[in-house]
Image (cartoon, rainbow, N blue to C red; front, side, top):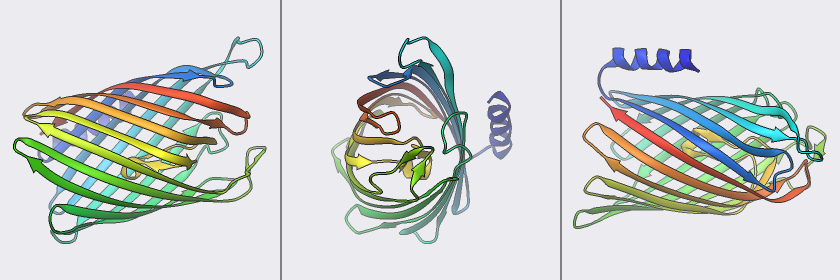
Amino acid sequence: MKKIILSCLSCACLLSADTEIITGYGKKDYNNSKTKIDGKTYFFDVSHKISDSMITLGYSKDNVNRVHPVNRTPIESLKVKKYNLKYDYSLTQSLNLKANYIKIIDNLAPTDQGKIYGLGLKYKLPKGFSTAFDYYKSDYEQFNVNQFDASLSKGFKIDQLKLKASVIAKAIKIDGDYYGNYRFKDKNYFTTGVNLSANYNGYLASAGAFFGERMFTVMKDGQKVQHHAMEQDKTYMLTLGKKFQNFDIMANYTYQNGDELPENKKDVDQKITSLILKYRF
């Protein structure tokens, strides 16, 4: 991880302008999971704008502590690394094209060595509206996942308060029968989400939620993916922060609830509390 971060920092320094670095650290807590107890998560992204293009490179690392389901003694930890690449291109002032790639390294899950490919477009409409459409193909050894996203956003301003509201829909189709030894019972999922973000004199806030069952979902504009067989049905997110001239600091809380399918464990809670730093130069 240190080598990757130092390499990204060196490249960013050489680029010298129109560069943004985001890094974060978080703690994970699980309730009612069959083996997972708690863990830590780290991530590092660097973005650079070149003319009409924006390139983003990202790395994340998760370590989750686990226990035996019967005697609750420690067993092998879950260790996950993910690498992601995003390329944005502004074809016109109104039309933006996007391509994504994610690589997964997981020491326990059947989705180890999984690869995710994505294509999308975003179009600005009159009166502050914008719409986006994305397609993601997740390529795993035993199965594939096709995901289609559509969203509609509206930006508006009330005096010094800048707001943006978004609605999102995700349709997910699993192509295959097995995740390890677990046989899929459902292969089609549909989930909807809402998000509201605000900026008031440099103070930042956003709140969002997803409703409806989903699995193997690509999130965060194609930069994150949930690659374990956990059928999630509720997600809530809250972020608070402060923007300075070249520096932002934010705190994020995410709550998710769902079922661990291979373990046949229902009503599993996952809570993540993170500190995020953003620097522009």
